[in-house]
Length: 305
Image 1 (tube, helix red, strand yellow):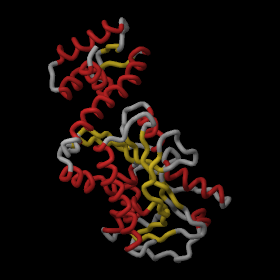
Image 2: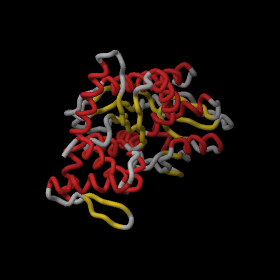
Image 3: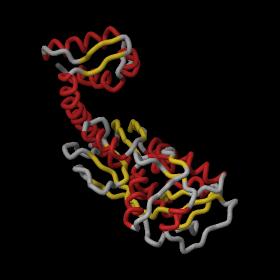
Image 4: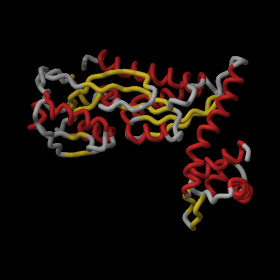
């Protein structure tokens, strides 16, 4: 067994298909199959179930995937830290982001990272908080940017920003009173995420606290779609300022902070407790964190806080 075999194995786990994995690794399919066969022979165990639709892990394969992710990452960390001695920052960083953070700052932040750190390979996906935390735990992600849930995950937590949730509506409709109460949402036509979404959990928790029940007209988990619907109808929504930032900048919606009572969400990033935060990971998170804080502040500057 060698490190390359483990890297091939992990790529096949991720892709679930020999053709796609070989293409990702820039090798021919027979070469990949041969390395996987050698790995199975080394352990004396079948690692994959094969079918016409792809591959899936056996029980032994699942255990190896759990162990190999940490080994491969540690080897990569060694190389990155050695490169750092020459003053360069390089390496692959895999990040998961909640949609509200990704849609606001991901594009400009990624461009900035590419310009500042040409040696960093950045891979980003979007997801729900619970899923992203699970992927950090299993080693599929280096970092996850999440909404802090009521029960804190058993992972190292790095606070980024806390921001108020805001009532938003189209600029084409009559504005609501500034001193807006959360209780008033009970009788309004609202569009908000479903109960799968971390932001909905925040809203439901506040609704329970003030003893009302939210009855949304629409439940949509795609936040950009919510903003588009609000901008073009008389429906309202409650989202954090970062999520509303693009629509506010385009002057398609107006927003005001809910103060009776205030509703806030906390954004943080988490890592695996046994994984070293490399120079590349730290550099990426510095850019992303600064841009998220800047986006939150720009909402305040616009007079919507």
